[in-house]
Length: 213
Image (cartoon, helix red, strand yellow):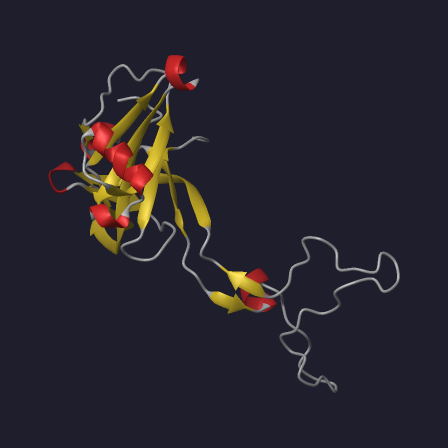
């Protein structure tokens, strides 16, 4: 399989198992695939080589008319998640082809996992940016978790861009790099990843070969 290929999946949760050395390994379990090829892009037709894949079937009435036509043209059922994987050669792929986790990854391989991080709502600077907080003695009143000074009075007379302040935390696209495949259960389409990955349980994720390995 092409080294640039990845797979789409659903985060199930964390568990642990004993490896060959008798050590406990904490792992995240991902229901990885099978995914279906919905489009094959080539340099001649699209300007670059890539395959577009889908994961997790979706009710037809829940997709737009444009996507409904796209899936109908490919002859596949609508899916919840669509992603592209760029590669040098796409000759081994065809529309409607299914790809399983056992074809993509091997045990011990380094991977990158992309997902939507857990939303934490509106958070203060101590939780959001790890501020230390203010001193709690010598006449300090109701100022223990504040962010401190914001600006510079007359010049330039406004709050600088990028100032760390309270706000919406989490719920954004996040990638954790250089994780390791600890185990693969090809029969049940399960991928065991050493460590934690972004997102809550049942959230959709994208797993690729590590770009900085």
